[in-house]
Structure formats: C-alpha cells, structure tokens
Image (cartoon, rainbow, N blue to C red):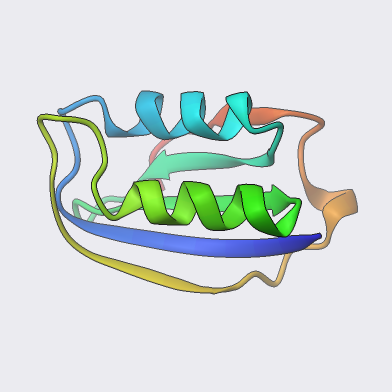
Length: 94
C-alpha cells in the first residue's frame, strides 16, 4: 500500500480533469481526494495498492481528452490512511 500526492499543471481546469481522475481512482478502489488549486493546477491524494496508485499516476500524465498536461509532480504524501475519506472524493478548490 502506498500514498501519493500529485500536482498536475497545464490545461487541467475546465476540461473535466477532476471528474475523470476521480473515476479512474474509484474504478481501481483507491481512497483519497482531488481538487482544483487557485493557481490553475489540480491536486490529488491517492491511497491504495501500489499498482493501482501507479496506474492512476500514469493516467494523470495524459488526463481526459480535452486536457493538456504539462507536468505531473508525484511525491509521498504526509497524510496517513486514517486521515483519508473511506472512498474517493472531489474537494472544494483550495
């Protein structure tokens, strides 16, 4: 099990990126969240089996068809699994 923090930049707001990432994470059984950032990026926290987290992180490099991903920064997350929601959710912009 791993927990990853993703920060995605490029044309990723207003193109359905959050909903698509949430769908990818849910279909792989991950816990966590996704949200827009005021700087125009998208941020996500993924928790679950290594291969499922890696698959969503790889998907994040492409995103949905209308997105133009410039960069995905991936790192370990500070949150512990007990701090995460039971499923995967879309959070308000931060």
